[in-house]
Each structure stands twice: as structure tokens, then as C-alpha cells.
Amino acid sequence: MKFLREVIAEMKLVEWPTLKENRHDTTTVVLTSIFFAIFLGACDWIFQKLFTTFVTHR
Image (tube, rainbow, N blue to C red; front, side, top):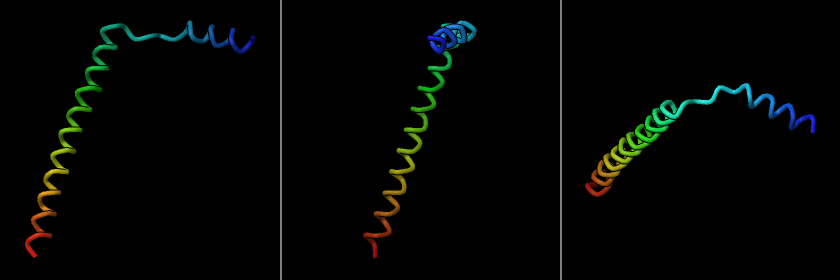
């Protein structure tokens, strides 16, 4: 029980983000994830085309 009381006391000291901060951070993570997904997908497509071109023209 001492552990739970300490956890509750510590959680009261936490400074939680505001709704605006939370939205901003979430938007940043989602947009960054989409950007990297598109970027890595494009790199994969380019390398696939290059590899296919070199392998089939021998």
C-alpha cells in the first residue's frame, strides 16, 4: 500500500500537457510518420526499378 500512495503522490506532481500541446505533438508525429512512409516508399520503388533494370538487361 505504501507503494501505491507514493505513486499517487508522484502522479500529482506531474505537469500534464495541455490539449493544445497534445494536439500539436500528435499532429507532428502523424505528419512525420506520413512523410517518412512516402519517402521510404519512394526510395524502395526507385531501388526496385534500378535493380530490375540492371538484372534484366544482362
